[in-house]
Length: 321
Image (cartoon, rainbow, N blue to C red; front, side, top):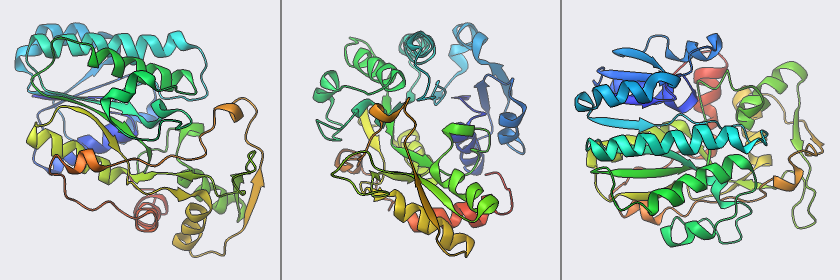
């Protein structure tokens, strides 16, 4: 049987659906299931059982012999939360316990890391593992992800296969519950419907024009393809970037949403909130060579095509993946 943690969340629920589409239904889904809106992500998915996050580790210790693979997608991901102890408990210590069980019982493990580990990108966005101890994330979330990555690389023993995926800016269906932390595409769509225009953050740096901050936006369906690639191959353990390899501007993003809705572009610029201004990334772009060397050969979805699929296939009809 296969396990997906964070299974009621955005990426986790999409992964459950993708596994179902591959004919895999013997799945244990793990999450905090107290959010009714989030639980809608699991509607029409097939799985064997639901295990609450707070009892999962003990459950796994008793049932590890029956587990064939774990996708550890669950994490606290709120970049506006500054209490590090919350992240340390859920993103570091919890993951360490999971790693230990996977190592002891020879269970392959794929886990979610983050591009937030790269901070301002002073060292670039290269997933060379030798650089990980030198990275300086900008917020407690990024710090927690990097602390676990560093810990993993120090371990003398490991699961039979493992990889940490550094998700860049993932967008796509099943993020209805994410509120402030939902993708810019999701917020832009809702703003256009409500007001006919989009608010983008103005630049607070002279080297970037308003709306020209650059991010590596990756469609969730591409993320799923990479997850399945490692599930099927179980070769080349290590840390991997998961973006597209091409940074795009927020202006491009907003215009693509207007085009998908078939409305004229109307964009206003607002200040970045003071509580995140000094921790805001102006540029991210995944170096993707390492993933390609594992034999991954699928093309990544362009920003325009991804937004069109997301808006027309999911947001406009209010569908789930």
